[in-house]
Length: 233
View 1 (cartoon, one colour):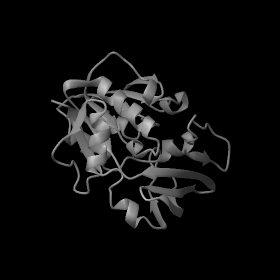
View 2 (tube, rainbow, N blue to C red; view 1 turned 30 degrees about the horizontal axis):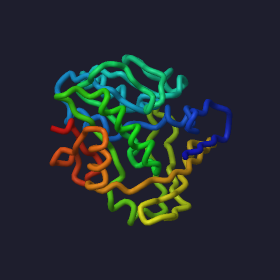
View 3 (cartoon, rainbow, N blue to C red; view 1 turned 135 degrees about the vertical axis):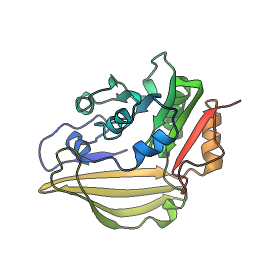
View 4 (tube, rainbow, N blue to C red; view 1 turned 90 degrees about the vertical axis):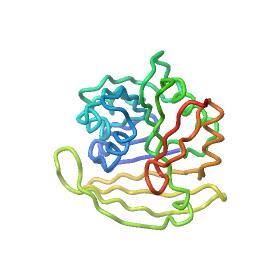
């Protein structure tokens, strides 16, 4: 479970995320990784899109995006894409896509049933010739994660930088990591607590097989944090 709080008023999503914060966080290399795994001008289903930090660069790269989030307040920040208000696990558009994206380490949820529901939605919407692009925490991250403090420029209007502080790290079980992340922008402050489950290739393949998918042979990034899956043959 993720819980976010801010130092001032603002919309909070059903899963506890601060919309104001997510509207400030910029994309990193996610759009380029997804683009490299996609055919030109692909139809892309982005699950858990938030405020569009990845959506908008994908559109600029020439793709057609359907952006899904359970928060109307998040989706209000998105332009140039079809938006759908829905929980990931409930989504059924009766449409197929060249690429289905499950990013933000959602696959690392500690609940196995929820992970299966997320992946079933991916399988339900990917074309026979399409692929599912998944972002997970690298396996080594679970052993090396340590307190840290770093700053990144904000997206949007290019205002004050965002300070990320990670602390409160614990390992409640051999395959679990729990931590608290703090985000500081000027005098605004948000905190998030999260628990993530380690998924090596074998564990991820087992989860994918349950919904008729399988991992590709090659990683999309050297550290294995981005992978691609297709329909089982």
